[in-house]
Image 1: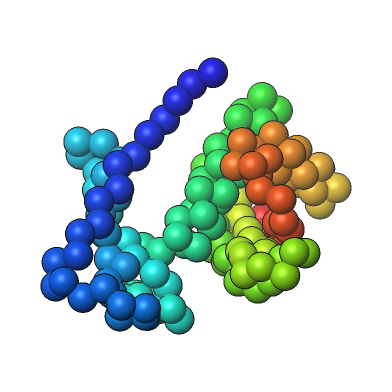
Image 2: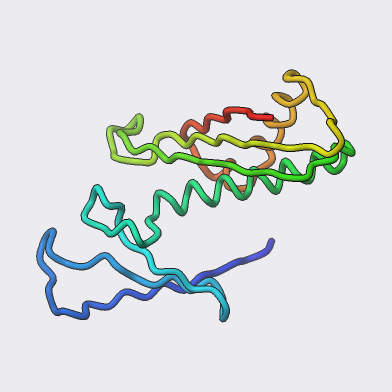
Length: 150
């Protein structure tokens, strides 16, 4: 079993710490070369210039789904030349009545070389397999919707 890690650092720089009156801005260090500033979503008082946890979750799922799709497409000898996605994370109440990311929508757009074509049945099948084999998708309990674009 492999283990991956990040480091998260938050500091109370302005000494303000009251309900609803504190900064959620923090740094996420991925490795020595990559660090990100993060905070709460703008709807919860954060700044849109920083990554928020909901976006992080959507990005993680989108990335994992893409890598799983590419692995499967390569095995099938599909000549993929470009893969892009515009993912959405939706907030709402889950089955326990708790606020959660209760839906993530993936919108992959896949381009193939030399007018290679995949019919919708084949694409639906590989997208479903990509979702079932994705490590991040398997860690989530709520709905993930994949809208296929070729």
